[in-house]
Image (tube, rainbow, N blue to C red):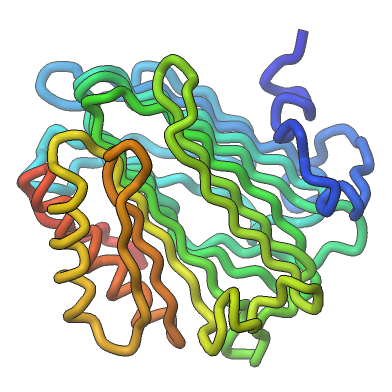
Length: 312
């Protein structure tokens, strides 16, 4: 039986052949700072005495979290959980898995303490598997800090979300082109991110895949991908409490007030919410646009604007 400390448990199944082409050398888990680490975080949260509390927690270094904090005066019940990573970032052979189960009626904001760095790989690749579940009436926000893929890095990540019909889920991600201060722009080997959302019965609601291989046919700077932009962000607002057409309209209005970005908003399949895509030249501009869209969606759906996350 596969356990949580097993490499197979932490590795996504059905990896694309483009990823497997880099090789996958099987090795035992190594210490913090070495290649080939297995990082595991398994959390369950549920309402308790007016707040959302952690009721189950298992963590295996280099992944860990501290106790939740409560930052939002408009939603004092919401638990803010900061995912942290010992070491500087992903290296070759790393396999990380995060499972977060939000019980019915819970309110959870999951983010990272800092940007995710992905270092150069000479052999193998790194993977991250994130499984999120939002029960009936639950609220879940998953908004990690940007991913920074260094020269020669290879990362495959899969985010799988199970959402009850009356739950509200806001997902977001930002991809930077590399270490911009060093004039590194899209010199990584591979960045592959899959997002899939299902209902509790397992039926697929939607899936979204981003595959970037600089120098290949899907070069990031080609007109059909990023064109003249370097930074890409995505935001998914999954809900049933607001007509999707109205949600699209208010998100477009929010983004119209942010200069220097190119953005688009569309309805999710099945009328389950809206998806936002943002392109920009600087991290500051793109993060401002993401915050504007998140703030507007949050105010409408949760009755509370985006709070100060007190990072940095």
